[in-house]
Amino acid sequence: MKRVICVIVKEIKEAIPPTLFFLVAFHVAAFIRALTEEAYGITPEASTLATIGALIVGKTSLIVNHLAVSNLFSRGPLIYGILWKTLIFSLLATLFQGAEELIPLVAKYGSIRGGAAHLFEEVVWTRFWANHIVLLLFVFIYSLAVEVIRVYGAAKVKAVFFTRGPVQSAGPAEHRA
Image (tube, rainbow, N blue to C red; front, side, top):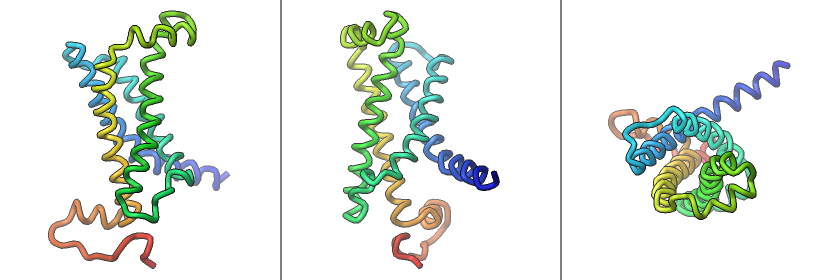
């Protein structure tokens, strides 16, 4: 039982950073969506969707980061890993955003088939793509942060951002003893 609790605590600790990151990202996207719809605030429904989305994507990002395919370019130049993870997370973001557009249509038309039939007619695609571009920017920033932390280690990245003066170079995290 103690081992199960330790695993659960470890999983929760690992899920906090991506969940917080995407919580901010999705709320920014919700705010932009509200502005493009000429509303001047974020509705409780939009905030709830953004929060649930952040929780789902936060956990999903942990799963994806542990898959072998997501680390396909981890031995090459850093930019390859960043762009690869950005592509993977962008595909997931597209699926989640598509589902976000489909869910109200399913409720409106009573079935997935009915909602999907009206998806292309009823979605405001300029708004969808504007929102998607913002999300892709956040996905790129997230992928950049994940890869930099993977290579240099969390302690060195924290030191670079939160200490004064030069930081002692210990080399990449994976080459330290």
